[in-house]
Structures are given as C-alpha cells and as structure tokens.
Amino acid sequence: MANVVKYSALGIPFGMSYPLTFGTDTKTFGQIMEYGTTVKNNLRNLLLTQKGEKDMDQDFGTNLHGILFEYQVGDSELEAAINDTINQAVEKYMPGVIVNSLVVEPKDNHDGAVVVKIDFQADFSDPANLEFTVTPDGGVEDTAQAPVISGGKE
Image 1: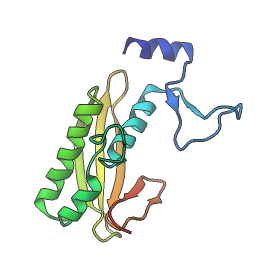
Image 2: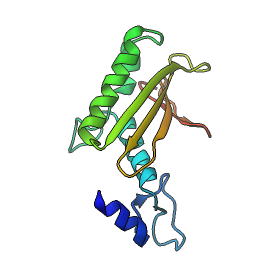
Image 3: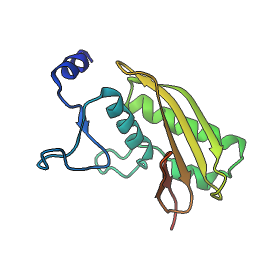
Image 4: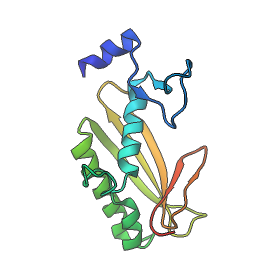
C-alpha cells in the first residue's frame, strides 16, 4: 500500500474509469486518479458479479440474485443471507476493505427488489458508501442515485 501515496504524488492512474469511456487523448480509456474511486469500483464489480460468472474463478462474486429467489422480501433471513454472501466475498477477494455497515431495505416501486446500502473503508482512503438495488425480474436500469441491478430469469 506504500505505492498508493507514491503513485498519487506522481499522477499515476490507479485504473480505468467505469463505465468505459475514451480518455482525453482518445487513444486510451478514461483513467481513475483517486485510490478511493478504484476501491469503490472494484467493490461494486465484486458484489455485482454472480458466482460462476468468471470462468477461471467460479467462486468470485456473490449470490445476490439467487438469494432473492430463495427468500421473500421482508423475510428475516433475507438480510442475513445477503450480509453473509457480501462479507464472504469481501473477506476473500478484497481483504483490505472493511464493511462498516450493511443495510438491506425493500425497494418501494419494484416487487421483490431490495436496496443494499454499504458503508466501507479501505487503507489510504476515506470512508465511502455504495448503494445498489437487486431485483428478481432480470432487467437492468440505472438511476442517478444508484445502479439498479437485476437478477434471475427474464
């Protein structure tokens, strides 16, 4: 992690920006210059990847979409199951990230959907939060507040 301070001082990017866009020179992708933004993007990618989706690492990701089919929104075990799959993924693939809090709430205008709110922090970055919605209908919609991610069958 000592390179974080060094790279920041030298203006070396930490990764590509998401969604992928061309950089200012149009020959490269847009770059992230802040370590905290890179951590947040990596966490989002980890949590929204379904287990079995990566060919070379079938355990990478979470089972968020499958959990919505297993439990009903409002079921007391739903939040515990989502908490478990997220914490297991973070502990295994992003051990430098600490999940300070995780809240699961029903989404008002989506039947069977939940909003997952995570407050986290990592080495050399300020505490941050990530919010996304998981729905069982298979559709995907983006909003200004948070990406809405859907799972299950279409």
